[in-house]
Image (cartoon, rainbow, N blue to C red; front, side, top):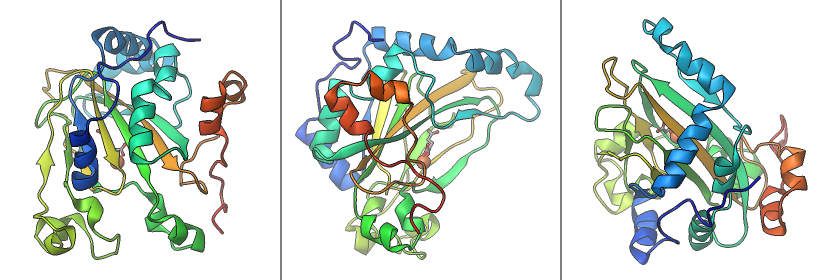
Length: 275
Ligand SMILES: O=C(O)CCC(=O)C(=O)O
Ligand SMILES: [Fe+2]
């Protein structure tokens, strides 16, 4: 199972300005970074999945109480989605930010229909929310989320929003998004912390340090886009499992080349694994 594309992306790797943005702001936004061919093939692959097809078909029936399609881990991946895991562009970004010692953590697929509500500002680095010695020891390690927006989003229509620089604030109970936006942590962050609402065309990607506060705005009932397709891959610096570190399907390991196998050979999360 492989595509005939060397890379799904238009660029080979991050520039120094991209890396500065990752370290200073906590994220890198890449508008229209997929090649047209890869974007179209990925959308076709996702829309062709049986469960997604069923979800899209029944959309009109639940407009009074819309629900997203959500699956985690997302293992039902065709060749294009499979290539995302170690595409040369993705590997180059991960090496330039985390270094060589990183693992694949988990994935998800989320399809948001018209009328769906917001997602409040949150962080996704699970070791901060637990105080076992294992979590404390892992706290400062990298946990990177790669957010793919194959059909994009506009302002006020399921747009991602971030608080640039919020990854620099220590993860204490006091460091809430409201208090950050009120200016209480500007000194610690070394900059004014303000919300930034993003707008991205189809074929875009956002690469974030999961320590940054981020959220999502609602999708209006009259949005011109019937649903927003969002898939995510998450990578972690080598170490113990995170909250959702997934089991790798045995057939993925069986057909992996050595470099890919290295990403997969780590412990998955299980109940009690941090105790
Ligand atoms: O739906 C999105 O754009 C982002 C969702 C999110 O915050 C996440 O998956 O962690
Ligand atoms: Fe998130």
